[in-house]
Length: 267
Image (cartoon, rainbow, N blue to C red; front, side, top):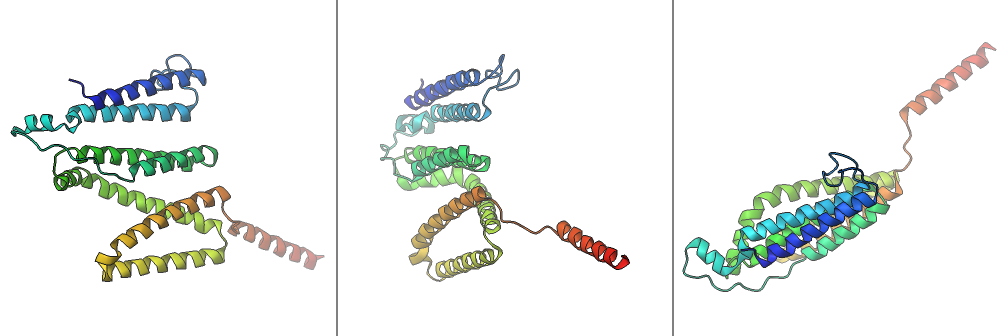
């Protein structure tokens, strides 16, 4: 039996697939390129076609997960586990993943105009937000116990989230900070690095000394700082790098001055 969730996301998969085919041929695709994902022929505009195909693949994956877990229906869970019954499902908890997905979509839209790197970053944010949003919605309806639901969700997602989030956090911080430091002047680069290092040290000290009181404050400030760093990195990438003196130019200028002085002396 096909579940309502499967029907919804499989319908989205069919719609995105049709949109990708129409867009591929309308934007210059040839032969069976849009049908074969570019294996036999062109697909037209690669960016638009790639976005639609990615959305279709994500919708198909979600639909298969939903039909496999039977939409986390309590009766299906009881039948699979052999239990007499499972308590009714609680209401789905609210989260910030829809906001994160919308922010990623906006970043990708801005990246279409500004820079391909910004567009890629936006797509990554959208995909991650959709995955987390889907897993939260599934876990909230898995059983009637919110604590058990949270434990089940962490058991599935923690081995994936911790390394991926850590790697992405390091990569985004390094990339955004490097764009900012090479966009400002040499003096301001030193000032920015010093201020940021001081704030990180102060936050770590407060969190270590008062973990219970400062946890929410540090988490909120961390989110604000991350958003500010990403926005600053995007603006710095659009602005471009400052002028750096090249060592080869200095060597050439010095050798030219020496040759000029030798010519004057010989004359």
